[in-house]
Image (spheres, rainbow, N blue to C red):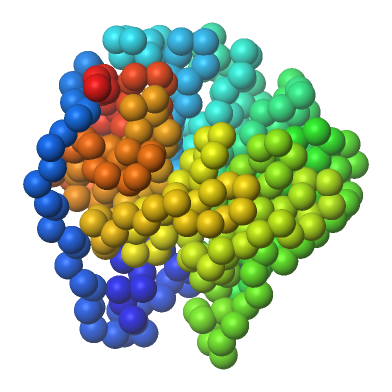
Length: 387
């Protein structure tokens, strides 16, 4: 059963956060990754700059969603060691660096005035975009593994124990807390909340999607994306760890050991569903959804009806991270240090580059032709994609 956990975020129990040990998991029978086939590249990737984002060497990301974010020409990054940095996105020049007193467990988000992160001591922290000075701290019930969201002068954060918070973005005062709850056993991953209209959408570890009123924190509608099956806790895991995506009043969502689904934003009515087990964020364009399943197969689904447009199996068991859309194609990194570029029209691999000999465990950040990758050792690198 140990292969079940390879490529996944670590499993843990909420009660005391007890890790499952090797005795319980049995002998490691992880299948080897697919050997890369020779391709004729149509895309080239050239390194522009690379800078260390952590003041501690070899500060592993810890399977967190630590993907950087870009705002007003500045790229903001967060490291598991507790360092938040702001750099010029074009040349990597450091604008400021701030070391927090605890490690960082979530990714980073920014608006015109704030940078927000969640730390390993269950605190939401807001820093000034100008100089990184800490503006406020607000305690929550447990860690955030997905970045807080800044919207309409509020900060929204979801914790791994199934609670959703709203804070005043200027002061950090808690405005409301919504309690959904969580099962005893979950994936060590989490989807971020999404704000659309008057709703905050949040997917939880029991396979349910909740639509909460952003002003009051009251539930407006709730839908089961999938239903738990099996007799053991592991078999019944149906975590929603891919952040929901909303387009044209349709909510797209995926669950582990469950389905990829499309729902009406108005009332949560199901429009279509397709049986695929997925727990990583997915990408979307006008016509298709792009996602990675448990076996590192890449899928393209028609977003209007859920029909399969193409299914790429050549990167089987390579530990693919979540896909990111670039003008030239679909960009993915793997756990073996490679970046892959797939054609969005047919899934053909049109670009590949060996980036590192260490693990890559974050989603690429796309900014036009620039691809930013955060490595496990804290190195943030900018690659130019040219077709």
